[in-house]
Image 1 (tube, rainbow over the protein chains, first blue to last red):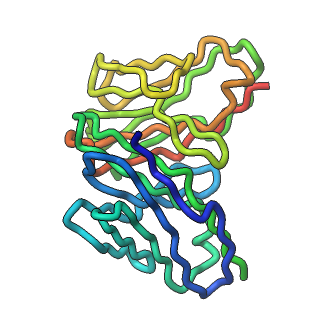
Image 2 (image 1 turned 135 degrees about the vertical axis):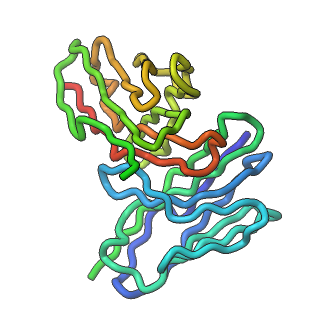
Image 3 (image 1 turned 60 degrees about the vertical axis):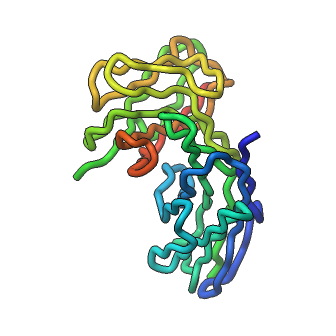
Length: 114
Length: 113
């Protein structure tokens, strides 16, 4: 069964600190993995997208890694800011259909305190 | 600026009412999607469309219906709203390959009382 599991479910950190969010998946055949940021009551906004051949990608203070062999990904946030408080969702796409089926994790709820 | 728009952002409506959630995109994407998301839960695909006059049901059974008369417009309709329909509804669109350029709208938070 194709699944995407994220950990931790929630995380509280102090402003300025770094943190790492985890994503494990069983989706096959794998096409790409995306990390989205979703503010409360808003739609998800794409942070990074990685294909099978990419093992790291950065977007400002966000750095995603991908290990396609172990089917694991992480999202590292550097020097956190209050505006980083949001849900971070890992999404994996398969290449077994023309739809480009997406599999969503439940997200990690990050809270940044001043 | 190319984008995807959803209206209304919030809607509180009584049981039994008919409602239509609007979704429009200006990116010329052929593929469009509707997702349902409850708090703290993952997104579930309820409808999708490959293009004009093409609509399919997604993984999560939904009493809503959709139509695709124009490429840029993908409205979702509930003929008779019930409290169980209370949720956030997210519209998305993607480029022809379906893997990149996947963009979400801001969502409609629906509450049925």
